[in-house]
Figure (cartoon, rainbow, N blue to C red):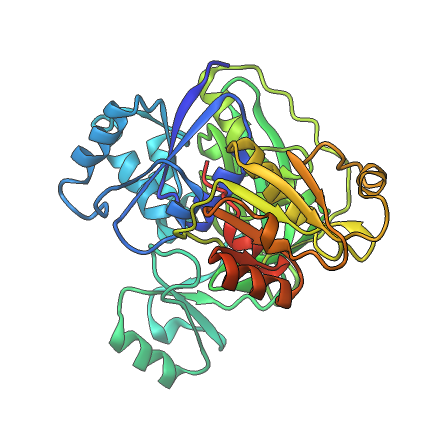
Length: 426
């Protein structure tokens, strides 16, 4: 496959970050990001990020096309449901191909009413009550026809509470409450081969509608559901659907979406790279999917990334309790040091190690990491050997860092501070 310029839009959503993780090390892909000019995570992980007005703005397509033309963008990955629909509605105006399914499938996915009307003929779906007095059993569940995550949803305990909720917002759907377990089924279809992959995961813990913990789910019913959906709608690449069990344990369809899901990493780490496969599908490249047969569980949490003003040409690093910590190589520090090598920084080991330094470095297989190794005796100050004034100093000892800071005036770091220096922008 030739090198493709791929724009993730918007790049800072959970979906956009998963696309970035899936493609950032693919030699066939050069990544770009775009999104509204609001605080988001994209600038921390994309080296090429651009501002585009919200899709409700009348000029968003014009601005998007400027970015597409000036950067020779081949494909756009939609990374938000509203963007998916906006791109589908403007497919003839946007100057790059969208990595998704047919516009008709995209538009159906955005409406719960349309989803239940079309797929309710072939799959069990939640019962929808047209009016409050039709609710057969409480609690019931309210959700918007067009929505994402858990925005605008509420659990209603009785008729009085339902009337109050509907007075605030008459446009929400009144649905049967499904109290059972919830599942996401990740799928992949190609125009040539049809449904090529179907893998289910239980949503063990969710936060704001985002799956934060998952484990594999084995049930032939999910494959039957996937085949029924794929026969009814046209899918080109990655897609997923969600089910939830009713009071009797029956799986009912909640929604589907013809896009990447933020937690598709669950299958990516087993060998199913949905974004890359979707690009191959768009390019007409023959596809074979061979995942590793593993039992894995996944849990997600917040990750920290930083932008900073630190500028340096050299790094001075301590050995004991810094590079080698509790008898093991400090892999986080090693990651940073190799980042420095990639950027042409000078690396110096500055240590009072009691044994032979080279033997220790050999034992831990880091013997060729440094441009210079300075082995001090027990009384020599480390500050006396730091020559550059645009260097940084990494040492576990507060007293060592204090002396270097006071005598030379350079920035000093301990191991817990290294994460700030990591550059993950691609």
